[in-house]
Amino acid sequence: MTNPIITLTTDYGTNDHLVGVLKGVILKINPDVQIIDITHQVAPFDLLDGALSIAAAYSYFPQRSIHVVIVDPGVGTERRPILVSGQNHYFLAPDNGVLSGIYEKEHPVVVRHITSEHYFLQPVSKTFHGRDVFAPVAAWLSKNWQPASMGEEISDFKRFAMPKPKEADGLLKGVVLKVDAFGNLITNFRVDDLPANAVEKGEVRLQIGSHPVTKFVPTFAQGAAGEAVAYIGSSGFLEVAMNKGSAARTLGLGRGTPVLLTKN
Image 1 (cartoon, rainbow, N blue to C red):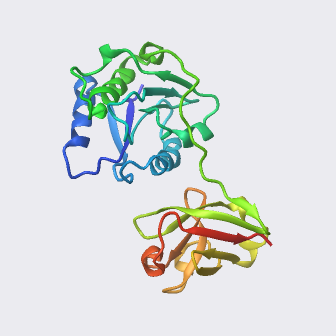
Image 2: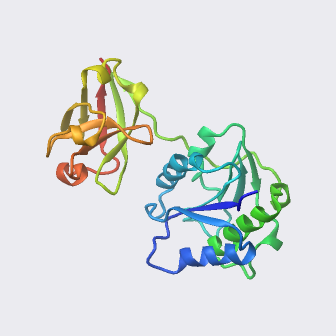
């Protein structure tokens, strides 16, 4: 078998020592593991942003990859650490809903409350469970592949509904889910929400904030400089961008901006 893979998705950023410490803990337990950073730029404390990030990325990794997802504003409280076994992947995270996107995609899942403290680093810090709980449990799982040894199954795990567009008065009402590093505005519309002829005609009737967007393109470069265009991004969501520019900065829009789509 090839070396096991552990991925990391956190809101830690990279300015401090935190990410490096996670990797050190993992490698001390299993030096043969491959550690892959998905992102450490999840918006701080933002469970939806964390849920979107891991849901967009995990399926591109080999089977039996172990995904550590740490966005944990309740660290040190009574919230539970959990281990989720999906069809072909494992996920370790706080039980706060940050895996809600995984629950939508993976059926069935087995969710365990991690209680086997002999896998933890001791003493366990009240503020750094990434180091003392999630990293060592992930490393031990990559050695023994025994999720049942980590704790008992639970069914009352926390999840939230991922934002879906709502239909009213012939319109679909959606929202900007996030702004990426290029300033592209990622909405919660998908290709199935578009009118049937949008792709053929290259037209869409979209209002994002107070700005109309009418041009639908396959890719950024088919938009004129300074023109806001719509397209389906690589994660399957309808996005608004500007060729070689930041739609977010130019239009003065950001996450949470209302988006209206005319269906006909």
